[in-house]
Image (tube, rainbow, N blue to C red):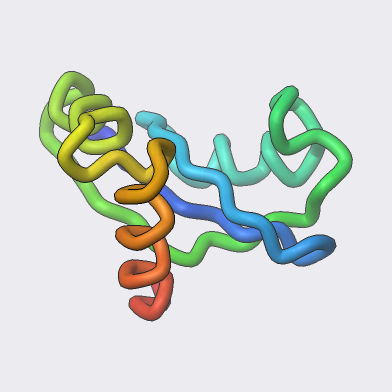
Length: 88
């Protein structure tokens, strides 16, 4: 089953959040509804980038890996700024 790494942007404060999920659209709905602690109160959220992987382990490696981690500065901010120009 496919697994996704995604970047969403808050329409309220323009911040980004990076996550991974098997059900991309359900997860986006949950972010906008405030179900997720880190995104609660900052929605609605819009999808700005997505990558698809065949395995969860590959998606998590992409999301959290040190060479291209979206969540670890300075690489994360640089990578994020390059990717968000690619609109879904």
